[in-house]
Image (cartoon, rainbow, N blue to C red; front, side, top):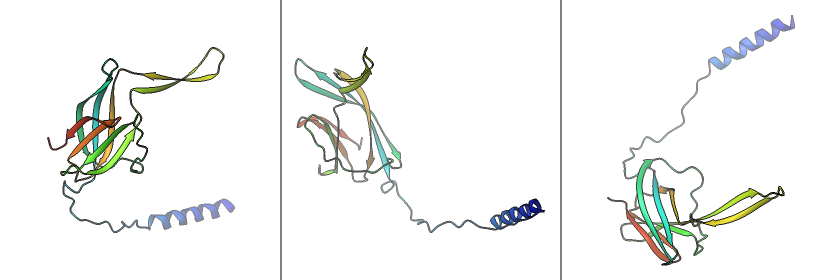
Length: 160
């Protein structure tokens, strides 16, 4: 008798849910032009360090612009340590739109377990590395500049 009641209740709930409609929220249907659509800039770069001349050499491998946004919070980085790689997005007048920094990609921190079974960390300075950066691309951005130790390494014109 109890199992019949359960079946009737479950059947009633299924009929109730089947009759429900999902309504779409009010979505703005404004036309987005290519200039106003959110975009992501992907940069593949090469960075080398010449220890004799004590100079960095940076080259653009390729760049890709795709529709969308970078996941996560887009927070402007305020940790502009001189040892970090700093990159700024500039408008057509050369004014900074956003400024970001990242640790020097040539400095790698490696964790390993030594013979005694303890976890150790070692820092390694590379001479050359290829790496990628992705960043939200505001519509007004015309170029990207890379600096390290207050020296300009590379200026990329995005209009090309």
